[in-house]
Length: 90
Image 1: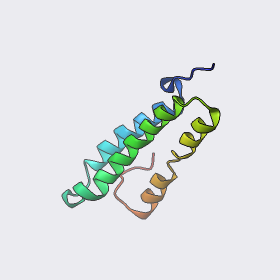
Image 2: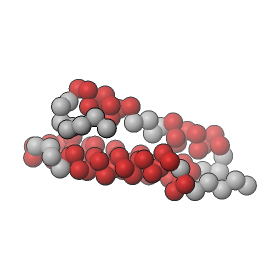
Image 3: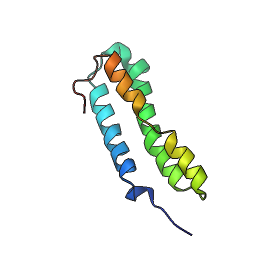
């Protein structure tokens, strides 16, 4: 049986970078966003990394693929376009 380790996946490593970036950027948000957008973005970024690692542990290719498909960070790009809360578009 093929054993995949999520720590070897580039997408998982990049998701950790995203978590770091989200935490750094949301530290700059206004205080009134602390329990709103700040919390939501942080939880969502952590969820991406968590789901990728959980997906890698799935036994069937179909199950793994489903977990990976759910983790498209397109939503983040859409937020960046609609809000000027991020300093850079990296």
